Length: 90
Image (cartoon, rainbow, N blue to C red; front, side, top):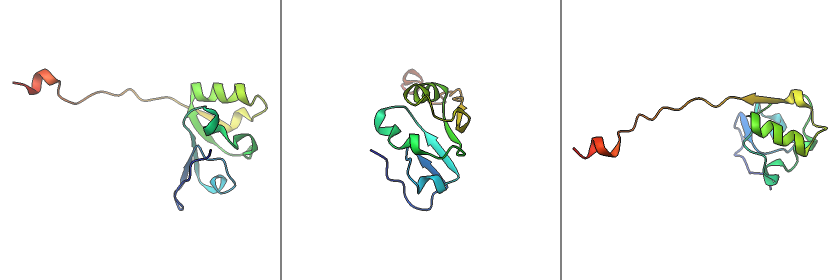
């Protein structure tokens, strides 16, 4: 089931419709079947951003999909700047 995206955004998330192909940036968050609905019909020239694991799983479901359209993103390392519970109890 595709996710409804608000009109006018420059990106689309897990939505593979003719309208989403008009956005500048397409993001594929994960490879559950409900997030893949319609991706096989996506134009080959599009650039779809996803994690490397999502790219691999998507290509297993759709081996005929244009690999060049899928761009792997590397997650950034996050650093917690929140105080620990021990530090706040003093």
